[in-house]
Structure formats: C-alpha cells, structure tokens
Image 1 (cartoon, one colour):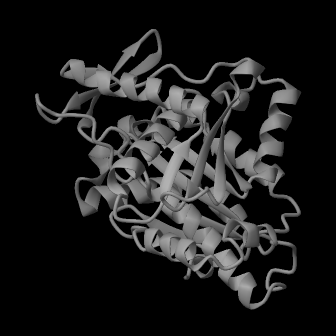
Image 2 (tube, rainbow, N blue to C red; image 1 turned 135 degrees about the vertical axis):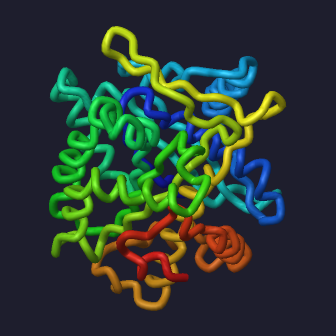
Length: 329
C-alpha cells in the first residue's frame, strides 16, 4: 500500500488539527453513497476523538471563544494523522499521511533544525494544505492577520521548498472558521478577494515560468464547526480573543465543506494517474507510484474516486486559481 504525504501548513492555533477532525467526521457521515471508506489508524483515531469532544463542547454555552489547545512544541509532539482509504470491505489502496507540526515552527524563535524540518516536509509532500484563520484575515481590517496566519513566513517557506520543483504539487488554501463569510455570494467573493490580496506574492511565485505548469492552487472555504458564527474580538493585554456565537440555542456541531480538500486531493491524483496511463512520460519524471495507488487499473476504485471528485465545489468562495488542466478528469 502506497503512502501519500500531505503537509498541514499554518501557524499555532490556526486550526490545522480541527480541520482534520471535521474532514474525517464529515467524510464518515456524508459519503455513505460512495464505495469508499476512510479509516484512521488507532492513535490518529484517539486524537481526533479527543478533538471532536472539545469541538462539541463549544455548544455547552451560547458563546464560546475560538481556539483549542494546539500541537505542542517538542519533537515528541509532532503528529502524523494516518488515514487508510479504500473500497468498503476491501483492503485499503492508499494511506494518507497528514503531517501536522507545531505552529511555532513558523515563528522567528524557531531553531534552524525546526525550520529545516518544515522545508523538508514541504519538499517531500505531494500536497500542502494551508489553514487560514478567516476571522483574523477578515475582521478589524485584517489587523490580526499577520500575527495569527503568518503569511510572510508561509510565502518564504514555499519560495525555498519549491526551488527546482520537478513533479506536480497541489496547494490548497483552506480558510477555516469561515461560517460568517460564506453566507452570501457577496461575502464569499470578499473572502476570495482578501485571500488573493494578502497572498499575492505567493500566487505570483506559483505563476512563475518554473512553477506555473507544475503547481495547482485551490481555495476551499471550510466551516469547521458549522453552527457557530463570528461575533466579536475581545482584546486583553494586547492579545485578541475571537468570540463566536451559536446560530441558535439548539445548534449542534455540524461542519460543512470540510471534506472538500480531500475531494480535490484525490481528483488531483486521479488526473495524474490517467494522464500517465495514456503517456507515462507526459510529465517527464517518475510517477509510477500512482500505478500502485490505483491498483494497476482497478476500475471500481478509480470509478469511486471519480464519483467523489465530482463533488468538488466551485463558486461561493471555492475557486481553482491555477492548474485547471491538472484537475480535469
């Protein structure tokens, strides 16, 4: 079974692990019509269950502060969230390894070893999922965006890690906690505009001659809790505390669109496989691992991935900024 590595990129407490929790929860609950199952390995399942309990506890009170304790800063706290993907009742065909690292590794005080760790991770992974705290980006004229989302460090990481890139990569920007900003077409367009504005240097890098044909860039807004909405920012001792309110007294944990990054990831892989199946030298480098992933032409598995991929959203904040041809199946 092949293992596919995906980097979870984002600063401390931005919501990387919360996004994974919502992704698994929504896949398990809403994908029953597709002949696929996503199964976390034992340790990953335990961590995600703990995070799920914390998320659901937000509904014990009518108003809650955003933010759950993030990944720690010591090496032993580095986490790999492992999910096995395959047809129902069949041995898995692919292991997805989501690498979550301490967000502090992006800070100025990070050691050279910690910074190198993130660079190596991004270089090795076929996809990078960038979690963006949407309220920090959108509220108070973006006053807290730099502090919380660390866009400059993220841009610099890509500039270093993608030097001399030889094989295709998928970059997904996933604004999280964005329930407020997808309520209307106007708000979702504003969210999209702000991302393009604040990450312009990153997108300019991806549009360069060396990278434009190799890097797919997608924006996928995620409602990581679903039934809460941003309320206000309380500032204390120079630190922001983002407050959220439930949409109603009986509101429950109900994430929305959290599986979209996974849909786009599998669509990307399927496109690479189908392209190489027709012409294995299409990209000019070795992608033979995809033959193992798709079982040397396992049509049932391929069709299940294709069916899942049809659910990739567009519009209302979702957009493919670059690399449409690498998503065309």
